[in-house]
Image 1 (cartoon, rainbow, N blue to C red):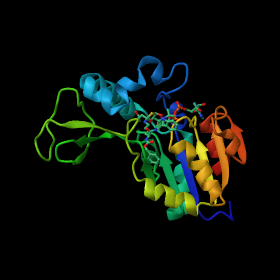
Image 2 (cartoon, helix red, strand yellow; image 1 turned 45 degrees about the vertical axis):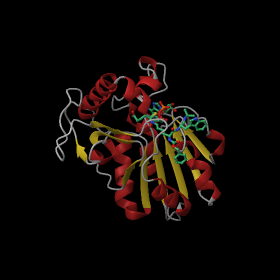
Image 3 (cartoon, rainbow, N blue to C red; image 1 turned 90 degrees about the horizontal axis):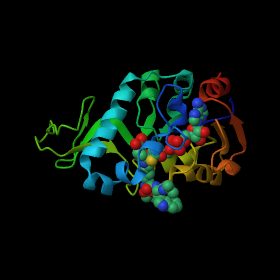
Amino acid sequence: MDAIRNIVILTGAGISAESGLRTFRADDGLWEDHRVEDVATPQGFGRDPELVQRFYDERRTNILAAEPNAAHQALARLDLEFGGNLLIVTQNIDDLHERAGAKRVLHMHGEGLSAWCLACDARHRWTGTLLDGPPCPSCGEVALRPDIVWFGEMPYRMDEIFGALARADLFVSIGTSGAVYPAAGFVQEAKSHGARALELNLERSQGSRWFDETRLGPASELVPQWVD
Ligand code: BJW
């Protein structure tokens, strides 16, 4: 990777699958047990906040129990090597990239271990339950929701992401089905600015045709092979 100056890596649920965290759209995925409209939209939260808080309480427990796998560790080595010329944009709400040691990680769909106060807009690291209505540590109001980007909401830090995509020589997509926008459009955006695009996934994603190269297999094998 000598000629490469700037890399943007997009990760999805597939990179954390081998750490025991369920993906969304597989046969045994999270959307098999839950209706997306009920647990991953602001309207669903408005209708039945307890259902949504229970769903994310369980996800938070699972995140805390999971460990980074060889794919997260390989990306952390790459992060160390490339420094500020690498950006990991993750759609995942787990903290496995950070726990593997990666420094430049952007959570475009929010973080499972963060709570957002709808009364005062503060965000707090949160490892316990939100179901029993804890007060916000900043303002005392009972108005905390999971700090997650649901359907119909604006993903975080889009300006930074589009800036990095415009500068990238290489765009790598790992473990994402390419079913959810705007992330699914990043490959075309990076390519329109001249980047090469590589896909590492268990199976071809919906936008596979946009990539210059696709390698199929489990992330814990493909990512270390690509990095090292
Ligand atoms: C492995 C593996 C292993 C497994 N190794 N690989 C019509 C057309 C276009 C867009 C829209 C439309 N109607 C509505 C929209 C917009 C909407 C959207 O995209 N809808 C689609 C369903 C069509 N998007 C939004 O609303 C977004 N906001 C928005 O667009 O704002 C306006 C805007 C526009 C332009 C610029 C800026 C803003 C918000 C989307 C929020 C997504 N939220 C969720 C839930 C919250 C997070 C959480 O609870 O965790 O985010 S949905 C869910 O899907 C989650 C994920 O981050 C996201 C992506 O899923 P991911 O990661 O790809 O997982 P899977 O399960 O789909 O795929 C796993 C992959 O891994 C598979 O390919 C496997 O093969 C692979 N795999 N094991 C390697 N071991």
